[in-house]
Length: 189
View: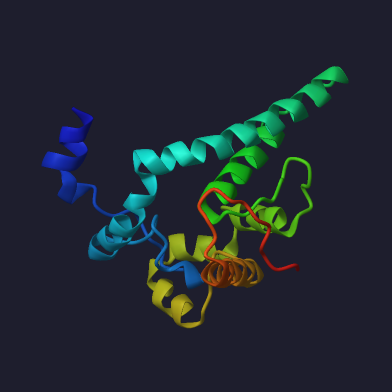
């Protein structure tokens, strides 16, 4: 029934999400893209999620799960209460960076890693941010703020990730790295 409503019969009503257009360099991110651009990105990403690729990712997920369990046991042995967010956030980040980018950051044991700190800065969102409030209250300001290069994401963070992705791309082109092999290859801050 959900598939019928969201895909077959009412797709034209649920095609695009609200886009404030102040995404800076992330203007074409998959969660922001619309219509034909979204279809193009989706067609490029879909082969990454075949059953064979997901099976290859499973071993990487098992490795990170073992690290998660050992970290939780260490904390539980001290009879301290476990704050699940401080375990599952880094675990999720480790799995995503390892499977998607072949980068091992070990954020459970190294929370001060530049990759971790920049992701935290990027995901930190404040509803009382003056830019966000201005866009919500005065939507006609969006084109002006866009021309002035205002963005919801800090420039230092997006620059870091662009540099990291460029380095990963260059490393893969030079070494023809195999899938599943995890390396640490991103720039220092």
